[in-house]
Image (cartoon, rainbow, N blue to C red):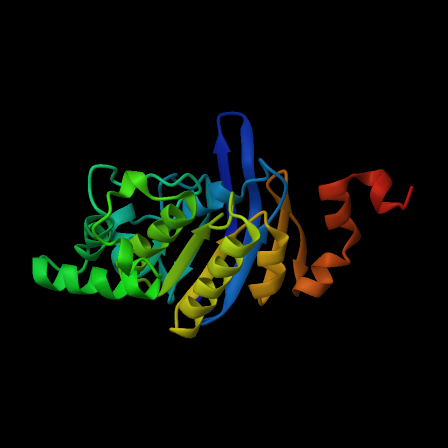
Length: 242
């Protein structure tokens, strides 16, 4: 069995099937990208992995343990962390205190939580902002704070949800560097992103979904040249060269 595996995932909301029989696996230490048009079901898959949504069908395994029946906090304790597409820092707290909130998952000791948070802030290039109110950070720094807070939980698998959205080219490059550093530290990554420069530049493999179903899977180069992917993003006429 793979390090992380999703088998025949189905998620329904009433009569709407948001995710329809999606399966994939991720090898340890790899970056697996998940892309698709808006509304295709990408974030819903994340929410199912973390059990924010109960599954309508299918199974999810992490290190050969079935996790789809576990509560969210237990899944995080097992080593699956995540960021959120819409960043929501604890506004009245400092950057340091925000990251400490994640560190408290693994320790109840304030000194240890603070030491862990400072280490992560330095890793994410936020150390100089450690005493700054989180609500006053720039969008780029809030995105990094979101990553730092997740890293403070000491994940083995990290789910990144659009961490480059809204960033300028220089900020995007920095985000890519941080993601590569995370992978180099031994953490496996599942990433959802609309910025194709990011996805094509860092992913080992990519899966494309549309209307809740897989339409393609392969290396970044294979995905770029896939006609079904081009059709999903740019339309039938573009795919046919009209």
